[in-house]
Amino acid sequence: MKKNYFESILGFFTLILALSFLSKFINVNTDSNKTYNLQARFLSAGGINVGNDVKMRGVKIGVVSNVSLDNDYFAVVNFEVYEEISIPRESIVKVASDGILGNKYLSILPDGDLSKTLKISEEIKKVENYESIEDQVSKIIFLATQ
Image 1 (cartoon, one colour):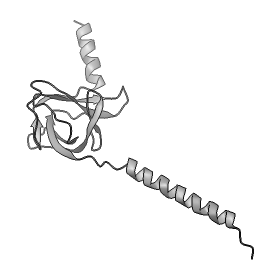
Image 2: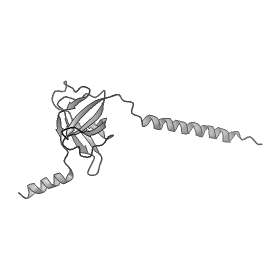
Image 3: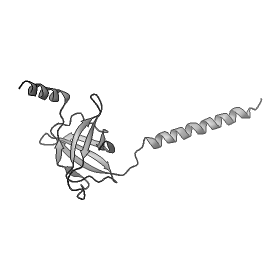
Image 4: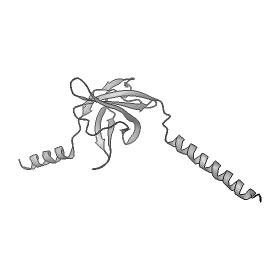
């Protein structure tokens, strides 16, 4: 039996390379940031799902963790925000989308006194409810006919 060291060494380096790519893939796809929970109540959640982004001024600062209905049939959206981000108490939250057919996300607009921030599990009181494209077009048509 002939020993071929070249194939063995090449196989070993291929295995090491595959394991390094696997570890990099796992590190990139795990979110190790510490978060705290907040919530908001909407008349219409407008397509927000668990896992959608939470953004402030276009920068991702968290992720939606739960969407449910309360006893008064409001859409309650619970979301996690990275610990290093402080949300001002008077901020406005709304459902936005990435383009016409893009994903929905929660957009937080900081407002009011920036020194007064929300604490863990607090609710953002100022919300702008979601308006679909159909709602916006019907408003434009209604305004144009008057």
